[in-house]
Length: 328
Image (cartoon, rainbow, N blue to C red; front, side):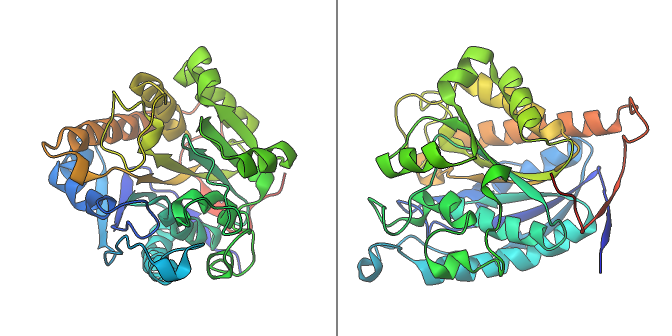
């Protein structure tokens, strides 16, 4: 039976997913608490939102897990995803925008699985400098954070591939990679044969963040289908945002990331977003937390302003969405 969901544009459902189990080091499990302490809830309320706080899932911690070198910490990761999925399902069903304060990138699987319960056709916008298309057969590290997109597409460890009962969780043509810069050879081979759309950081910088985001939304047919946005903060150039798990040279300028996120956040078909890879252990004075809270407040305030503006056509404004979805 189709479940009708009435959008609640002035409400945000907040969920903490304090996990570093899929990551490359400890620290990112502290991100939800650090962002709350930096005033995120109060800032969103001041921007005009009613924040429904679903609390934090149980922490899941990084470990070397030498017994499972090809896919480390799987049991902890799956346990965390089950916890997140239950909370996110309630949030998605309520029609609120879902904001997941993640640690590692794998947490987006829980958000996507929750959204898929009510939306059969779902797009994923992967804002990250890494494609995360490795599998246990190709991984150089065994860390699931380098394999998340592959598992979303139904390729990899059975425990994660089957987390959603009918893989893939998202189809390849419905995934857009945005901000790419680092690719392992197996990932390059995968992309060469895949219908996934992908946007390189250098091209986004050439166009500018806003134009790059607008083009990506157009190419992924965002007006026709709901989508989830994943933000890995290491997409930002290290000099602009250093406290991340896997820093590196290059990356997008903070201004381009900000402009792109404003465009993504303003779109009416955005169902939820997760923020990953901020590491408070590398941010002793809290500067990174403040910068990230400022960014989230700005883009979500822009969303509220856009959704409350007079609709240019009859289809604008609050909508009812059937879980039956639509097909391209």
